[in-house]
Amino acid sequence: MFQKGKIFMAHTATYTFDYRAVLRVLASPFVAIGNFMVAMGEASSRAKAVEYLNSLSDEDLAKKGLTREDIVRRVFADTGFL
Image (cartoon, rainbow, N blue to C red; front, side):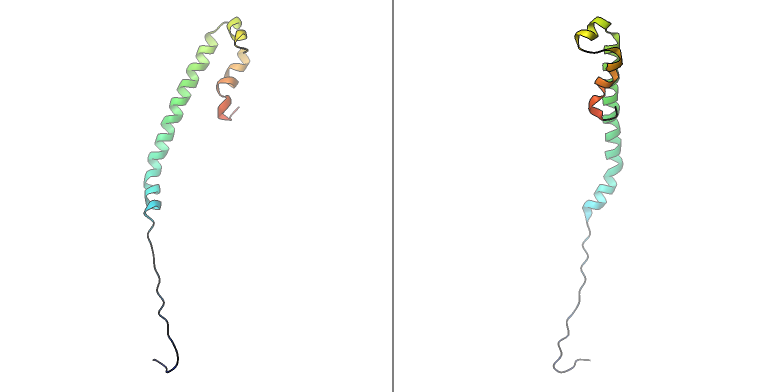
C-alpha cells in the first residue's frame, strides 16, 4: 500500500451548517405578517387622509393647491403606484 518515495496526502471535507439560513426561513412567515400589518396601518392612514381631503370644500382644496382629481395622487405619491 505504501510505496517507497511517494507521499500520500489525506483528503478531508469539512461541512459547516449555516444556522442563519435556517433562522431566516423560520422567521420569514413572521416577517411577512409584520409587513402586512404595517401595510394595513399605512393604508388606513392614507384612507383617512383621502376622506379628510374629500370633506374639504373646493375653496379649501384650492388654498392647498389641490383639486379633487389630485387628492388620491397626492396622498399616494410616495408609494410609486400612481
